[in-house]
Amino acid sequence: MISKRKKKSDTKVYALGQHIRMSAHKARRVIDQIRGRSYEETLMILELMPYRACYPIFKLVYSAAANASHNMGFNETSLVVSKAEVNEGTTVKKFKPRARGRSYPIKRPTCHITIVLEDTTVYDEYVISHDTYSSGGLWDKK
Image (cartoon, rainbow, N blue to C red; front, top):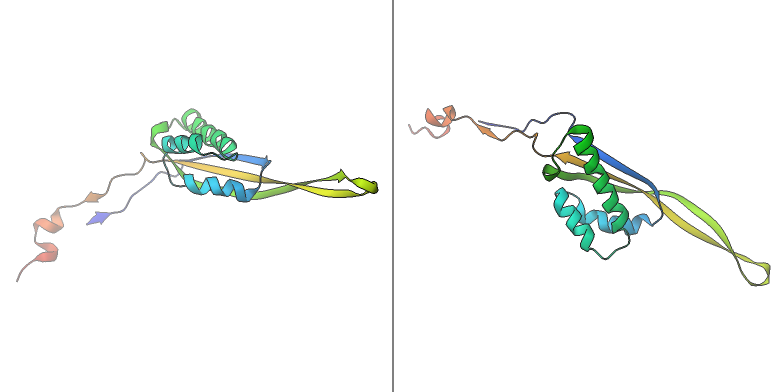
């Protein structure tokens, strides 16, 4: 019989960046690349990607790992990005003066980025009880 994984309740640590001055669409392009990867692999990917959105996301991942090691005592090598999401924030609206006393609106989008890291060492291994197989159990010939 195979028993399922058991996990502790407080294994997740998060960092939240609000009102980051970039489009949510451009930040999602980077977030989709790091979701589900390990912490060390995520830092390497973010350093090498040529997008402007990488730097604030890099800072958030680094901050979440610092929260995990300082507040919870987790090892940084066993952290995995379990959840990464980007939501649209408020839009900063300005007016640019133009010719003949007119003005054109300028809309500067912002976004909120949430990074959740999870510790993988708290998962128990799969446990196979051998008594089912030793007695013939499932494959007993008759």
